[in-house]
Image (cartoon, rainbow, N blue to C red; front, side, top):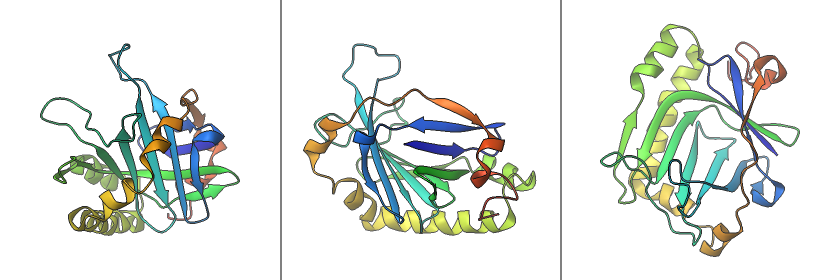
Length: 197
């Protein structure tokens, strides 16, 4: 399947390919997929498992990093490490078998100990001022961020990212090649055309 991820400040749409064996949940309400990813800059390191969660009724997505034994692990630069990267975004929309969403710039990086930091607020504010996202989307983004922070502080986020049995991580297939698609080919995420606009 394909996961279309549109960043409104980019001219085209990011396309993440997920082999069918990496799709763990595909319902109207939720998508959960996992792939093995190489460690950037460390070709001899054991691969990581990236587990991606998208929801039809939430204004955010989750990206958890695990080792092949299913343990949540931190990645990133020293002093800036995180285990779960949360993207404030439009809700999951299915177009046939493909998942689509629009990144709304705000991100929350969550460490394994539950601490977190909200990043990219200036980028969000600039996107709002440039009308890259609609007024309604900006309002939903702020509400989504509030709800996401509630998930984090109450432990719900970690409940969700650890509920898949650990041994399932070892079954993650390699990701399909990353690509890009013209925005015109994915009207479900296009400005003025997408349902959240």
